[in-house]
Image 1 (spheres, protein in one colour):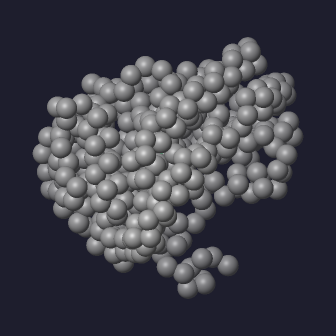
Image 2 (cartoon, protein in one colour; image 1 turned 90 degrees about the vertical axis):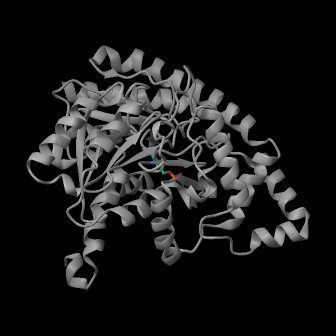
Length: 421
Ligand SMILES: Cc1ncc(COP(=O)(O)O)c(C=O)c1O
C-alpha cells in the first residue's frame, strides 16, 4: 500500500525512500562487515574525559546545575552563542564581518538547522542549487519540501562559478529564477569528496547570489561541518566573511565532528530576518534544543578542553587518512582507480574504471559485501535531475581502526578485480 493510502501527508511521501536506509540495513544485518560507508567519527577519541570534567564543573554549583537542567531559550544558550561568534572571528580574521548574537541559532545538530532553513525558505517546486555531487541528506531535506535540488558542475575547487552563472541564466531564461531560493555549498572538506571551495570562489558565490537576487534574496547556505578537521594546508576565510551586509549568507556549523555527535549541538549564523523566521518555526518544533548539552559544550570550551581535543582529533584522522591513501595506492590504483588526496574531512572519493558500476543493484556492491566491505555508492550524491555518474564511491576513514581500513580496502580491491573479470 502506498504512503498516501494510509492517510499520510504529502510531505511524508516526499520524505520516503531515504537512500541511507538500505546501507544501514546491510550494516545491521552483517555486523561483521567493515563499513567504510558510515560517516561516524572515531570511537576511541570521543571526548570522555573532557565531557566528564565539563559535566562535573557544570553540576558542582546547584544554581548553575539547575539553570542547565531548566528549559533554555529557543535560540539557545547565550554563552555558547557568543563563544561560537568568538571562534568564528578568530578563524576568519579581524577584517571579517561581525555577525551579532541575535543572528546565532543553536540547533540539535546542524542537520536540524538545514531542515529549519528548508522549512523557512522552500515551497513545493522551489529550487536549490547544489554541487554535483553533494551531501545526500540535504538533498533529501529539499525533496521533503517538494522542492528540487539541481546539481552544478563542481571540480577540485568546489562548485564552478561559471557553471553556477550559466545555470542561473538558464533558469532566468525559462522564467524559473523566482523559484531559486538558495545555493548550497560546503566550504571545507565537503561530503562526499572532502573538496573545499577555492578561496577565490568564496566572494564570487556571494556576488553571484546578489546579482541574481532580482525578485527575492537568493541565499547562500555555507555548510562548514568539517571545517575544523584540517590535517594539512591552511584555512581560508569563510563565505560568510564576504557577506559584508550580513544579509545573504547562512553559515551552518556543528560540534558533531569536532567534539561529539552524541551531544547533538549544531548552530547557524543567519541574516537577522531569516534567523527570526527560523526561530518562529523552531518555536513550533521544540522551542529550543537540549539546553544541558549546549551548556556542556560551552563549559568544555570555557575550561580550555575543546581546542586540545580538536588538536588530538586532527592527529588521529591524519594518521587514518594516510593509512587509507596508502592502501588505495597499493591495492586500488593498480586497478585503474583514481581518487582525490584530501587535506581534511572524513572521506575519500574514488572513481573506478568506467566499466564498473558502483550502484547497490550492480554486481560490485554484492561482491564487496561478500568480501566483507561496505561503501557508499556515488549515485546517492547526485541529483537525478542533473545526471548520475555510476563509477564513484565514497569511502570513510572516520570510524574504523587503521588495521580495518587497510583490510577493507584490500577486500574492495578483490571485489573490483572480480568485477573487472
Ligand atoms: C556536510 C554535512 N553537513 C551537516 C551534517 C550534519 O551533522 P550534524 O547534524 O551531526 O551536525 C553532516 C553529517 O554528516 C554533513 O556531512
